[in-house]
Image (tube, rainbow, N blue to C red; front, top):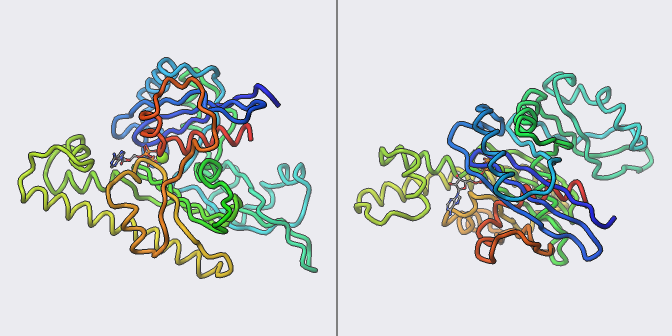
Length: 348
Ligand SMILES: Nc1ncnc2c1ncn2[C@@H]1O[C@H](COP(=O)(O)OP(=O)(O)OP(=O)(O)O)[C@@H](O)[C@H]1O
Ligand SMILES: [Mg+2]
């Protein structure tokens, strides 16, 4: 279908960002990418809490980046999102959609009526017993989704679909790889990290972790007794005028948080490995702003004893007139995984 396009919108703790893709004869093109930072507290745990601030940021994003449409695919990720492997009796896709709410209540901690639910089929089971659809059931609190949708609409945009952020990451950086059967993708955010284990693009395990780069910043701020904005700069490697004692405090704060984070990933990988010994994770692919922290990849490699690489969400895309030069494009690459993947969900 030549000439189709889609915009993916990621409302993160540290900023709003969007990517516009178009799909034509020559393949997929990244047409636009933009982001606008958010102040602390505007978005908490994946949920818009200060609507006017987020609306302002979205308007600025649209004004500044030249997106050609107002329809967006929105991502959701927070601790209350439930992702669970479930077997349902086999049925056609059309039936599945209609009967899903009736089928899944037993698997959810909240009422179906208060949730937005989706089912992602991973395989059809046909081993002599009843024919089944095995898949990942996804449920998010309606209130949380609606608060984000309301912000989007107040900014003059329209959310035409809502998708789990983890699936967006899977689409953008989880492409099938000749030499790797199963891998773990980890998008490290400010407060939320998404872990997806997949084989050739087929998700096997999804977990939303409540840790990310902001925990490191908070730890630095606390140790040094400085405001978060300053701690953020220090964490990223500057300024240089720290005393030796201050530098040591920073190093130990960063190390401690890294250890907690890496342990979180490791225990999720262990949990997955115990129930899926036939599909071992062969490597880890990172994305998200939090993956830029010096030492994350190395630590993860040491602790898990698996190779760790950086994901590339723009590999395989033509680059249109994004207004970004090569250096800017490579700088935003880790942040593009979610919005690019959300847009891919609409047009791929
Ligand atoms: N150069 C860098 N070095 C270290 N950390 C960085 C760097 N750039 C960004 N970060 C960290 O990345 C984190 C933000 O990542 P990202 O933008 O992916 O999160 P988000 O999507 O806004 O938040 P969330 O997904 O948690 O809602 C912040 O904690 C920030 O400190
Ligand atoms: Mg994020």
